[in-house]
Length: 198
Image (cartoon, rainbow, N blue to C red; front, side, top):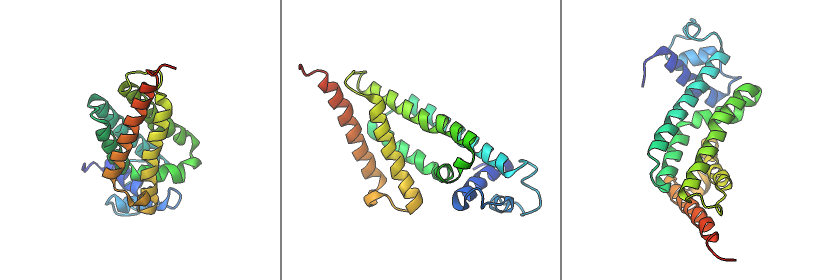
């Protein structure tokens, strides 16, 4: 954990935005959560406004996501390990999910940037991975399978983030195993359907 004041502010702000919402969070809340004396201007030495903090915090989240994606693509591992890694990443992004779904509709330009770099890119990368798993078989609709499977991963963690429980109280490992089984079945079934003569 870095002791850099800017990083402390960004982490504290994301926690505050996730817990209270952007509109209800004050600069004093962020300062206190970051370990600064509230209302002394410590935050303003680094950021000119609450919006500037939100913008920088989202950029930091995107950078972390890009680094994680690069590491994952260099060591793809098994389908099961992909599911486990995705669930860990979503756990790390719990505050981000809350901010995205609760507050970013007020900031369409930020939402669009997050949508493209975080959401759409994840679906594209997953579709590429599924196409690779199926050896590019034309019977496998990698984009549709990615839409279904990534959506289920995200939904599983969104429900947990907002309710404190997972659907059916299924733990991450059970979910990862079921997810891997479904992805494997979908990619092999699609590939096999192209080999069966009509």
